[in-house]
Image (cartoon, rainbow, N blue to C red):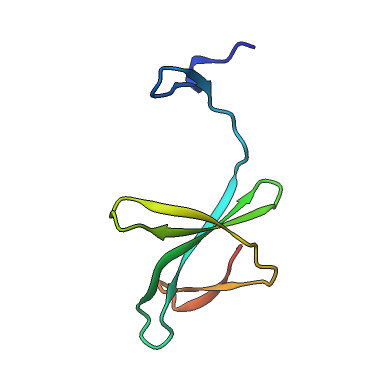
Length: 97
């Protein structure tokens, strides 16, 4: 099959590959705060991705000792509806607006 040059990339080994879209959608990222101080309680963050069909995948982003590296770990999807605190508006918000 012929692909446009704009979607072809070259690996470090020089092998050609096509960038194939897996899904497209929205995301929400949040961090964990100490409820007494409002300061960051844990360095990890949670990334929730929603594809165009409404399917949600969740991941923890855990910073490693090297400042520019993080570990992405698949998290079990929480079945309960969640809300997040928005410090800019000082109010709670639905996870998916």
